[in-house]
Image 1 (cartoon, one colour):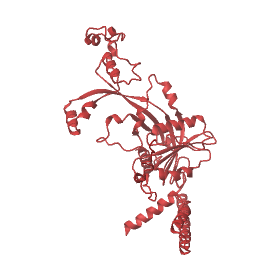
Image 2 (image 1 turned 45 degrees about the vertical axis):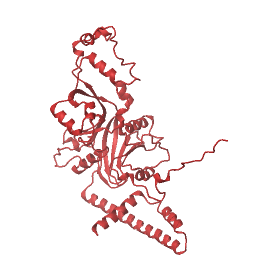
Image 3 (image 1 turned 60 degrees about the vertical axis):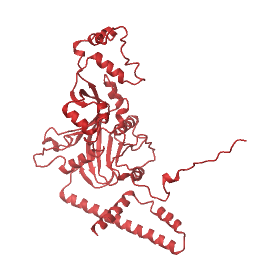
Image 4 (image 1 turned 120 degrees about the horizontal axis):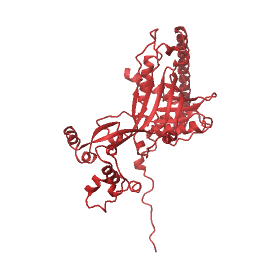
Length: 436
């Protein structure tokens, strides 16, 4: 009779920890995470939907690549889940009734929010078709891109001594874009992990006198996305073909096969005349690759075998280094963004700057008073709401109800609180404890 088997392992409870413990907040980590969302999923159209997919690919790996929106989803749904998931940025693409494509870049949970109009854009597939030798095998997206920003702070002022965009708002926009990706430390970041470049170039106004014109854009950003391609220099085409074939995977080895040297007596015959092995005729111009820039890098195999100190000394002495040509190949997408508005909060708050509207000092003071009144009324409503919940909890405890049931009801009563409300209460408590 066969021996009956018994389960020796079912659920691993020890590794998961107690079910009553509160999980750590993933937003505490400094790695930025983002969500690229279609606001009104059924109304933006196929072209904008593909643009959203391309932007998600650009934001990898710190983004929700497989996010599925529904027509019934609202902004509140995403802001509610941003806290538990550790999301720090929201990029919302929408389409207005007039056909304009808009982008809102918001920091959660407190803002601010930058509003842009997407004046022009090109999808990745269109960029790939325009290139003679496109690239993008997939390994480029395993690490975040290198962010390059240009002309984000403008030194020019108009004839009246005013800027088209205030200085503090330019600094704010710079900080928001810098926080999209984790900072790169040259001392600890491996050079081989930087494979992409995201270029943000701001177009400065042509002249300060025309910057006050409503038709002249004040803040325009051109976005480009490139892959970094490096190739060894100083090698002939034949030697480079052998080097590439040796490092090529088995799946691609059929296209870039090792040249047949069986009919030659010595490998020097192939180096002198690559056409002898069926590689075709080469000219003198093909021996050196046309490059944009040449850099000296340390040999990766030597770097693995040696310690960091030995590798640094070897690099300073020029031992184990070789020259490589650096070239940028565009991946897409392309976007031309025109900033129209900056506001506090997440897609709803006090307007800090508007491209088309300007207010006098008295109107600004009135607006400040309105927002202070709203903030005070909201704080009063929160206080009354919290007192009601506490009174209900104490009454249930006094009636002799089970403490576990009371805690569940207490959690249900607080479920309607916004994450922003909880964050504001937490910050108030921390400030109080700090002053004490």
